[in-house]
Length: 392
Ligand code: PHE
Image (tube, helix red, strand yellow):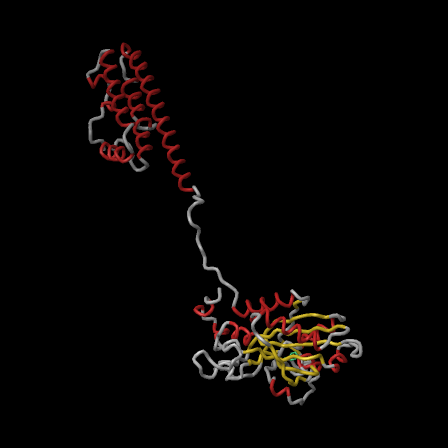
């Protein structure tokens, strides 16, 4: 319901207009009113439309204003056509028509301009919205890092690769043949007791039992089966033993196997290689020594020791007491190794008379614990980020 008087709802006669000048004056008033409204900001237009409510105010203010003035059914221009132009006496028709055309083109031009302005503004807003500011900081996600064991693998690989070794990997599930027999460890050999491990539950009639490898040494066999000498490989990987967990034992741990076989490899090549590795890994200050040992697949077999990294080999701690790490010995046992037992060559069709070589198997967890002064092997497997973050 219109709540203020709207002159365009009446005819000119009803408004008491019967002279051309009065017609012009009335048109001028309408135009003034339009000019006042078209410049209003959106919220004022909305209020105005609600107040006057001559046309629907349900759409946005600019559309309401447009409907109010040029709406086909009851816009001001339609009302003027119906009430003023059509009903004008012949004497005023000319002036009313002329005034109407002027008003109409004025209103349409202004509304057109307004529409363009609003569209440009809307474009501006979308543009601003879509604008990507490359100077803003990005979404930073926490970046992971390599596990310390993986890092130590990498250090060891780098050292051996630099002296001509290549890196190979093998299966963690093995047959007894590769894990034991071909390494000169027959069934019922007592060293199997040290390596008791996890066997897989297989259906009856399976062609061979399977077990989680107890060392990386099976890869010595697999490599020699595939390659003819010269062979120089290292094999990083996981191994499993049925050990009860404590500060130095875990049922899963890591080894790097090494194997070098060629026409004339001597014990000197072997000790020289190990010494080079140990000095690269722990630093030039450490000393190495070897002691006789026993492995069925190496002959002679040795245990390599390094001078204690904690007390510098003196056996005495900084406080004057006995070094707790080497228990006063000044040496720490590092890993087992030896010259490849000729019996092993028989399993891989190498001629034991013409080739010789050495092999070693180091416990990586142990090396990492010594180098980074970690006193519990379990931390490698617990994956506590407070530990992992210390080795980014
Ligand atoms: N495989 C042996 C172990 O796990 C280590 C070793 C490897 C010894 C190679 C000699 C040669 O104890």
